[in-house]
Image 1 (cartoon, one colour):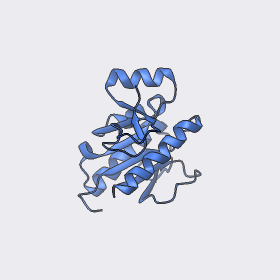
Image 2 (cartoon, helix red, strand yellow):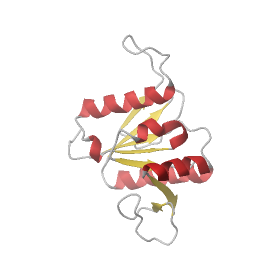
Image 3 (cartoon, helix red, strand yellow):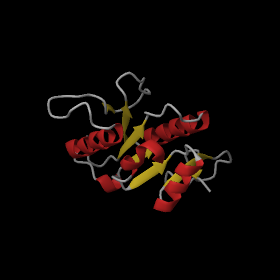
Image 4 (cartoon, helix red, strand yellow):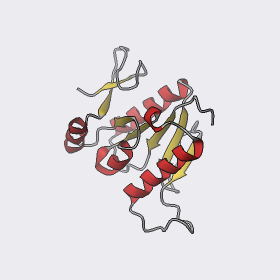
Length: 156
């Protein structure tokens, strides 16, 4: 991986995300792809991965060094940390897109956590921690959540 590229992790392990939140996720993927970022999908082995991802990591794969009984939240976090360490990326420059109800640990390990709104409790948790929640914008104005346009803005 080119060390100048940012790593952007997309937590795709959300069976309960609304259609709006799924659209936000795809808009974010398109935005970061256009920026030349290194895109990483986090998912279960059986989930389809969006086209254009540079890497896909699964947090349910067990091997000799990592038992299968690790809880999903910890396993997701471990998978992301291993990917960052393996590429030499700067965690402060990395992004994670997730929802705080199941992906809260992921959001703590990078410099640019982005919250997909899942429920009022999750949005409130994100606000208390100072994490940016994203929402769609339709007027083409520059959105703050991505650091430029891209069709997303900070949730107000």
